[in-house]
Image 1 (cartoon, rainbow, N blue to C red):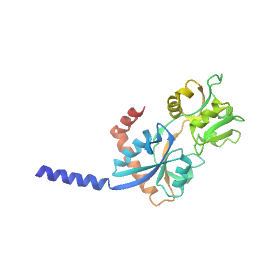
Image 2 (image 1 turned 135 degrees about the vertical axis):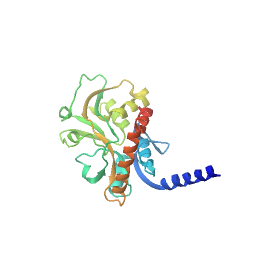
Image 3 (image 1 turned 120 degrees about the vertical axis):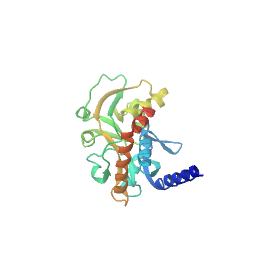
Image 4 (image 1 turned 90 degrees about the horizontal axis):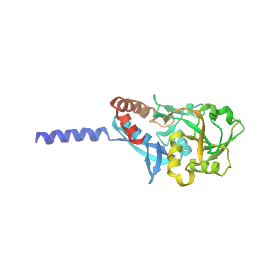
Length: 243
């Protein structure tokens, strides 16, 4: 009887601790970090965020949507936050940002596999046609350079198809996302592209709403929860599952 009572007390505590629920926007085209799988958010960043908030008693619902809309809805205060975002000069002042990045990555530039080029920087891309995904950040140096001719696509796969058809000279994409896409579309893309440069190595974050009433509150809670899962080794365990 005493054991049963203890279990009931613990269950009540856990239930009350996780009663708080929020909705975050999750981008739909950034596997393996965040993407739509059967209309649900799935990815490394999704798991990290879910567990960081769970560590402080907050349950997260993820609304999967295109990145540009995700950011806009967060800017308007409809969503508490949106990920994965880079706090660069273009959007940094529009949102609230947590202390440490979810992860750090390489924003690369790809050419056709027979290209003799390598080691390209932003300066080498001036006057060239580069595919970019709508609303994404590729580092201040790239994003603010008006001499680069950008061709905007809604999905990375569209940009690489344009590159394959020689309608653009390069495609910009995050390293692991490009690798995952090349595997997924191996029949079409296998061996067709070459990494020819890196334009930035940014940290990726949740962009928390400045206009919504709860952005600052949940930013603080995420900072606490993220510290907990990093110190406990849980972050590394999630990383090992995905990478």
